[in-house]
Length: 593
Image (cartoon, rainbow, N blue to C red):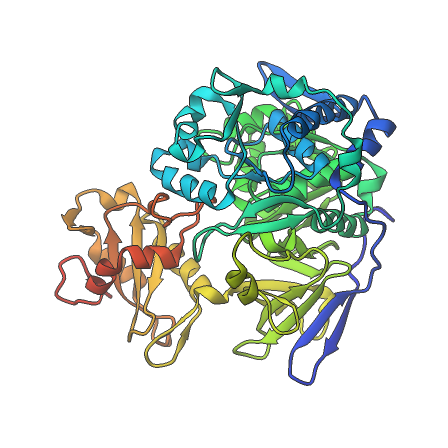
């Protein structure tokens, strides 16, 4: 590896009398800026003509330099100030990533107006409008922004937005975005009042175990998190990062981690209008032919899609790998075969593998709290604490499994207008209770880092008192039902047996008979055979019954989150009658295993 370009792990451990373990970083934290727009001011002076952010426009890109971005941010901020907007008048952003979205966000942060970016699905899918209305009721925005009046018109027409200024980039609804860009006036005094405790944005949790909550995200949280990353990644200061990134800005990783990584280091962010789906992957491939990134952030399925494309395209492979300092996966563990293929391609193009890593964090942790920043050849490692983060490991149910709690300047002060949830989120020492479980990669060497080991909140007990580790078992079941199940929900809390509700593929639906919300399928015997427990599997691992759901998970009902994940708890609540039927051996749709 290049000397000085990457850093080695440095972790410290304290074993406490109560059995818990405290982990901290051995690296000191560097300087922290006052607020996010200090970065913009700095780079507008240091590199005024460098491209800051760009989005696709016809055959090329709409590009905005740092100098132009600062001028437009100040103009928009003046327009917001003229409207009397401030800390108590948040802006709801209902469309996806875009240049105008970026400029409005920074303008709001320039004078201390919170923004609330939400998943665009809530606005684009009529069935999800009740979720959008619930969010708007919680936020009480003064302004709502969308980039296109036609696509987002039905959402903007919802009664919850009556009396709220509607701003659009394109179209004839409400206020044209161009009007904000025409703002005039000196807003430097307002900017001077923005400090570490100023709320930058409210980010919504995914709602995987409850309704989405508004996470208070301060300037301190975002700015300290970037200072931490600068310690872990020395290469950021040596070469301004270039990203081609699709990760959504309503999520903390795309909107805080990646966006601010570019801004704080004077880099360039090309907004990818593609996604790792069959319909949109071609856009990413097209964009990669024009942009050679220095950092590649993606989810495992995204890396798999790129891997497959590069196997067939030598020029694309060279374009992708030639300038990379780091590949970074998040959202799930990366299959080892994808890792191995990408490593082989990197060696073929450049003779070495860039840093390939992952991290761990939550919306409430800004997000990065643990990070794998030294080289490894294993997928699934999430590393060691970043500087100034204290990780408390509380023993779980065996010698090398811990519940994770965290403390530090990147941790949220709480949830918007929800003191009860805020109080529940912290233990008596002030550590944020994450609900996640982890293990040491090597208990004898903490510098090798931690591995994620499931969500404790998703685990449940059978009526025998036996714990079911749902996260790991769910992945096993999905593997067994490959081709038949889009997703599964494990059942069995306070019951004698573990069961599974199956969200079917079209192949499984074929020939099925409807039984009032559940399907009797022709492949029932095959499902039973695939799920049949092994001779040594105990009750916590043995699936004894299955049910195929007729209706897909509903975003409107909160059964599916904005990230596309199932909200297991909500689905079991909304389909309580089906759950009862699953444990009725006489029900024609119940598959006995």
